Length: 612
Image (cartoon, rainbow, N blue to C red; front, side):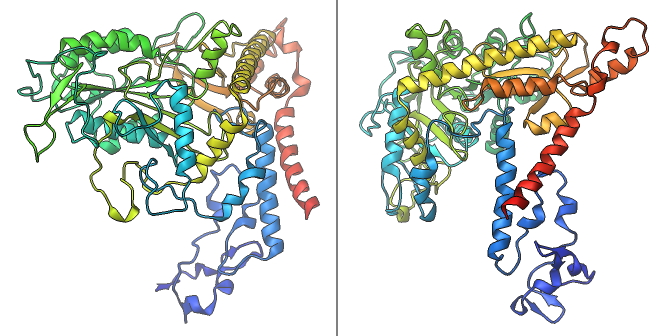
């Protein structure tokens, strides 16, 4: 039992702001001792990092008793007002904020009051009848077709697709791919016996020499990833204890890095450097440096686990997956990694299977779900550019993920992980009671996400989705142009850049008020012209719910004198300079950006009060 020796139980808590002690029922205490712990302070005083300036979170504090109907109504109105106000200016994230094309609520809300659990393998119903695996299989086949995989998923066809709908976003898919890739390259048993015959498309050794027998590195995979990869990649590597090439290089080959002048080992494979159109680099991995690094470790017998990205998080760049594979395959063939024989079944030591000595994973969280439609538009002559080939047309691709909440857009995070059946690793345990093999990462998985993805594809034709991505491309071009025009008008370098086909436009970070209002992501990037210095960038993402009116509204706020702190500082230096052009303009508008944010806050409170 918890004794409140500091008498902190008098902290006002909940919508009625009564002391905590007054609201604890007798069944939860005995004398001066409690079966539950009291607050040590008012959470409102502690949770200052939450962006809730339009919402009094006191209304959401939960009590031992049920909240009254009036309290619940007020709390939900607070939430609704907060979310709607930010939805109006949701510009800085690679997610859809509202769903203009489909109506999930009307058709699927009935399933919010029932359990839908897709536990276990998606292609086996299992013992839990309340699942939506039938919809999940349809969704997987739909994306398998878009990604040029063999479908349907047939246990008798090792080259057919296997995958599942994620309960998290692509972070879960990245975790699972790296786990599968690690175990595949370490020679652990395959789920369905694996590949029995050599893959003609990959070439390489098919008989004779076995490079895996005597080399101590043969089952020590090493991971490679670019500096513009998603942060979940490094987290996944740490969780799976997969060494990165830089860690192994520093520990075992100090001073021998072939891509640096002094031989030190960077953690990430460098991306392409700055050029005229991209002052801080376009975000695409440097293929020459990647090829050199892979050659170094493949020559020493290490299996290669490579992560490529289609739609990098900050710059929206697409790695040229096809070109990278073509450059690396000769290295794999030269060092016996294109195909090799692996003995993985302790019960039958004479049995072996063919495997690659490399695993290439494509993190397509943003780009994998819309690039197929951009390619359709290209072939139809509706656009002059297309993205890279990144899917299962390429024989050297092992796995692929996408995030459904990024594209096409869902009300909560989800996604798809996909591979081929011949690459699936045998699960460490096969629990009978779920009635299906435990082949997924999550175990229990929510069954509503497959319905969301199914509904979207059921409503949106290929033609409609092509038009949607072309709209986003047009808005991205418009936003880039408007920001460049603003930079010229202000006579102040906003560092504007956009990677090819990207929905993201980078620019100098504005003040905190604008950053908060528009939900902007920010990132420090090394300055291209001053060694040791950094630029603080923000970006906007032109997703499906963004239109020209929102871009115009955003640019108008950026034109305010206080929008960029560095520019305001320059103005202070120049204001007494005789003849200074900028000193004669705009000073009467100072403070309007901050005032507009305050007005939004007051408007939020007024909206809630009017509705009660």
